[in-house]
Length: 228
Image (cartoon, rainbow, N blue to C red; front, top):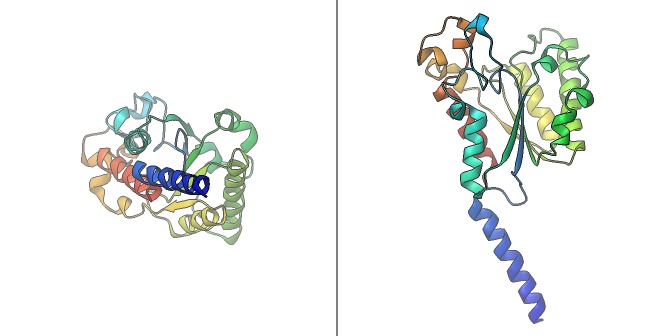
């Protein structure tokens, strides 16, 4: 009887400790994989005036949403997570031809415990039922592949620039995969979240990306979603 009470007490203490960490029970965040596009990570591209290598168009690496989420998770858990940020814009532009297992082998080998999927902006406008079906099929396939490699906690965020068709498909696929969907569409409606409102850019496309404020908004939404 005494032993049983001790086991129950230990389980209760462990659950309380998880809650104190700020994360939902059973959600691990020691290795975090971010699959996205230029908002997640973009290499230097001098032709468009982008000379750094982090999420476009944050003013510093520590101010893009990837590093803000990593910092927030460290504060919540008391441990700095290992992170990997991968640009999969090729998936967005080649839904039917992208080889998930081959292209993401290194990411799957990373064995992430938390995966944040942040795409949609580069997917062509879904004007036809055929286009919608293609995106739905390919996106579901991506989430299935992620889940099959270690069953990490899955977070999917909507497009920064809200798109009813794309966001609806991603939400449905995320729910079906047992993931957490984060709607950030309101951020893209506020131009003060654009980098162009914070500083000048030689290329409008770069300036149209989320700036420091927008990046923080994305990070805050994701961190809020993984809290209990």
